[in-house]
Image (cartoon, rainbow, N blue to C red):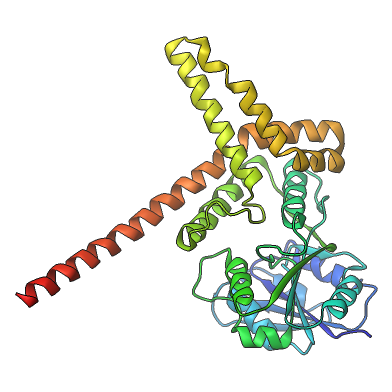
Length: 346
């Protein structure tokens, strides 16, 4: 039986990709669906592009953020199930059919996740690296994932309504992680179906890749520090990535000590550390090889182990600084209130 599926797409100044996104949606081999696009007060011509397609367009009166756009789209949808994607994601022709089979199997009160295709829409090295990396990270644990990403998230309408939706006063990103964790605490099951895939448009250069890593790392660590789960193996914030960053910087310190003191003993741990890192990340490195062959796999190995840890570490450091800045004023206020209370007792 075909379920009625509502595809909800938030849009903000995505004129470069929203046409591709809608074209792919309406090319689906599945017919029982609607598309709801919520424009978050864009100032480009994306609204004119959206109007060319037979979808429901809702325009917010002021810039309100992705969470409110998704919530607005969900509340104005008619489907039994809501399928959240982004304006730079392209449905595969068979994606909705796979979604229908999956929701029919699991039933309501289950949040179902999909992921990126390994090969993105644009075929630059940095885009392929990111797409393959996310695909691997999100599909490692299919039966009990830590969260479901909103670039391919399916939830039944009643569960979404009861949940209250995405947090609208939250950080600019990671809102899907908070939403997933909240639904799981309420008794909703999370599952991942790797066959539910969207093809992402990254258009990544080296600089965009590094900036994305800094931003994602900062917000992810801010959330993790607050929730005291920094060392949890969760999606792209995996044990593999954390091992990779630690290995890179330990080797950097050892090489720096060698240069500083001219003692070859500092270099002895470098090869074992590097090989240990390769062993821990062997499954990801195999995915790089399977995605783009030996040349791409070799470049991805170098980028991932020697360059990518730097922006991740920068983002982590920024998160720690922000966390300390938020903790200490709170601590000072508690001490001040305690002192005032003690003085009043005397």
